[in-house]
Image (tube, rainbow, N blue to C red; front, side, top):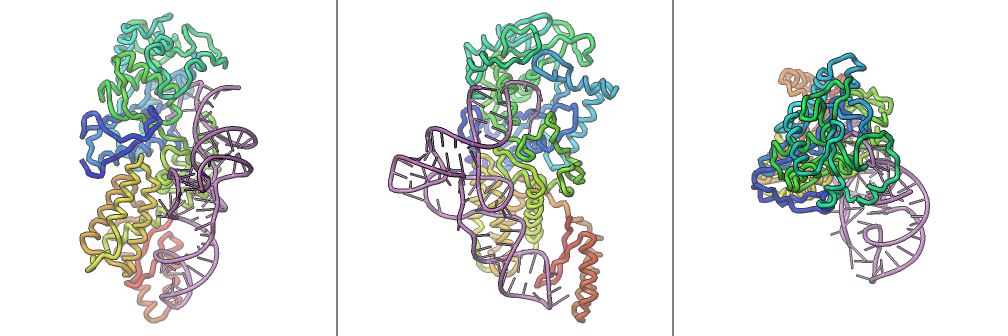
Length: 490
RNA sequence: GGUACCGUGGCCGAGAGGCUAGGCAAGGCUCUGCAAAAGCUUCUACAGCAGUUCGAAUCUGCUCGGUACCUCCA
């Protein structure tokens, strides 16, 4: 284990930042609630999965062997919890005259493509709800056997009030149970539940319902919290280290998930609950139902009405990582533009790194920089502070490049290793402007040589023409002491 | 209506009782044929009011403003 690993994590369960101690080091089990694949993922979803991607990457970087499980919800959930309405996948299938599994396939592929676009690593296991119907039926049986559920007209409900008498049902959300029970807000929809907080484990399929499976209680489909309980237990055990998801899942989905696990196994399933905050647009949560969501391609092409132009995936990733995962982050042109510039500056410095030569003494403190980066990351994955520290490093690199400072080989190696590890491995950023093509590089060298020759004979009209022309096609020439270099701009 | 959270300089966004956040933008300087890039540098903020304290952006109370959850949502 890396000696730097005194990692602290904010735990929603305790509302405190706690030292991270895995159950079976060096192994770490992490479960994150994935998407329901009935439509395209939007940037808010991307933010959450990007946050967990960095968490996954950093845990691995610290030397942990992480099993990262992220489900794909492909069994339709009802549009409301009140037992009325259609399931979302079924509805979409009917509207588009497709088989539900065609809908599932389309949006699963879209989801994976988007994840790859933003350089999110694939999880270790990506289980689907429909692939675990048997496990969910078994779990329902067990909960029934244990007395925490009841059948009502072919639907199995979880008995929240009974459970809450024995276990702290609202522990995660911090809600007051009595207030929840007595909340006068009318949810509408008559159903067969005994208690207003009860939720379905298994739902009887109506004749028109497309996605259905046989069960001991007739044909039906699983309730919308059950898959996560069943699959996390299957792949990570009855008790595991980390469970994550968006903040909006806390009061209902995760609360019910915990209840199901305890009712089934009599064990608290998760030690550390991590929740990511929302991406907002003009201060308002980005969500499908509010209709203010940005799709990844709208962002990249700039086709969204609220955008002046497009932004690259890495610009967006960098933008997201400049805010802490537990804060809301507001999406705007100005913020994206600032992130783009900053990201470029960071990557320009990274590109200089291989060219730096060691000196006979060190005039910069690389070890201090390294410490501050790890201190930030160990403090609940504080990427904005880590990035701030990285910009100290950018200054170092530029100063070294200008020959105004020097580092001995050991320190230089440390600086290079730090940037490699943090920028690429942990933050998951990547160079996207550099063509990295030796032919292009050769061509550019030829052009820059011609320009240098023109400059040498003081033919500035020609040299400026070359520079302006390159700029017009998106290549920026940078004149340095050691000659000219180039980089691609957007 | 209930329950939480938030309000930081031109913008984004960290921090969390005394100690520089950082990025972008803007101004100045260095370098340069000119520019760009790069470097140096300037800009000192914490919604308002009251309180606790030697000391508060950071703690407490109130006020105002905003958001989230309570209903599918990452």
